Length: 311
Image (cartoon, rainbow, N blue to C red; front, side):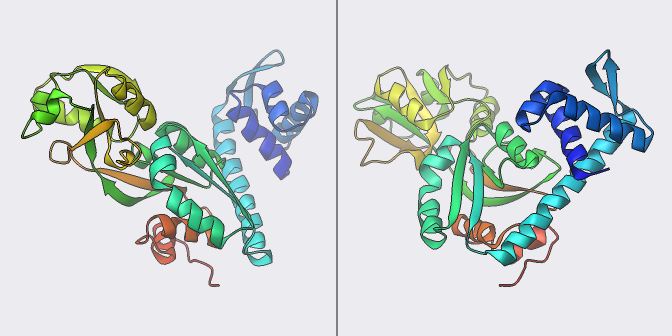
């Protein structure tokens, strides 16, 4: 048994039981992967996969147990490399952040700027997606940390920590009649077509919950995953927008007007997610603290039940 066999096993499952796709992802041959999996099964004395001819159609119950152990072993092997890299070269490496458009566009730029200045030798990557995709990237190891508002806390294999709270606002074109209202209410908002986030994004659950609690049916005309798209269609006069307040920048959004809606929708919490039992490089701790100063190295390490390496 060797780590390469375990990598093959994990990748086959990750690729939906398609050996050809696993071979392509790992830059190796399909026969080579098949041979190594058969050798692993013979050594363990069990069948890991259910086959129909040469095609894998399912994973067996003992195979599921082997896969869980294999994934832990691969994770620990990755941690060993991280430990070695930390002591060999503390100021170089790579860090991948999976996040949403709103976070990447409006919340992260100051942190990214400070981080690059502090760690010019670290290659920083930003992957954008919806909260489910973000969680899956962190769980698979494609991303080191995830940052999003919705869903991250639903995954048992992720450690999630609150970064900050934010509120929604309503945006309108210039001279819109809603601007003449002395007090913004859900009932008045519902009189107009609404352009807002797709359900999985940026506190959309809080928006829905507020209307449901008031027994008001909003007129959702258009949804998008991108705050800039929402602003574009509001500017075109297709409706009013509900979006994260941080996404409205007065000096840039001169053709729009903003109304605070913090009294109508409960605050949303942006969270950071890290895979459980992950070994974090020193610069990863620093990135987290730059983004959320209360999440110090000690706080994060305690949440992950590990002791941070002293520098």
